[in-house]
Image (cartoon, rainbow, N blue to C red; front, side, top):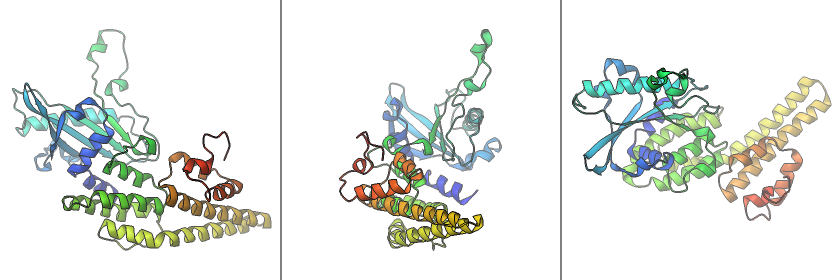
Length: 347
């Protein structure tokens, strides 16, 4: 298992994260009818031969609030996928894993043969580059028929949390660790990461969150930093506060390095083209990239994390647009004023 897989699964092995996942991202009535204090991670030691390959998936159980039939358990099966492409047969895998899981509950004695099987809620957490397009119900993978065979077609849904498809406006407004993790996953620069780390440090300051703080620290060290600054040799730190301090010291340095790299790449591109015009164009592109990075940093310092729509504007911006936005930031009171959003103007 890679550092990414192991550290991410360690994060979702914490009670507070699973509770935030259900509260903030599963907007269904049943999530209001469970006892979050009863959340319990299932011990992997009972995994049978059939489930050996799934031992690294995460299974929790939680009690549903008492009803006339007494307390009942609900199982939450969390399947975390780290793949570059969408698996079109994920719904089939989910149905297979659920069946094997039910078999194991019976073999382990957790469910007696006279009892009904408990409900299982399967959720796929996906952070690939492309958006999730696969079927979310096994029934959609089976050839439809108009005769009596349709009654025998199996049906099982699963929820997909597609991190890259979640905009800032879709995230919970209240404190939520999963929302902050998604912000970290989709952040494009160290300044944005520092803002999120500062919030997490405050939210998880209670000693009971020490294990989760450590898990997040390991993930940021071994996964996140390798993504945003792959050429930097960063010494591993031991807690979130140290990460915030280190980012405060290095953000400016990293930004300047990116500017220099952009200009150098532009000059090399010009030389390879063998034309003075190409060199000037390359240098201009490098300088434009650097100006964009500095403007993004200033915007985030004033207004916080930037929505995806604003990040898209940056990727397509011309030098003139960046200069115009830079002038506006001096007087703007809101992010919308910088980009003249909802005013009929084209920034």
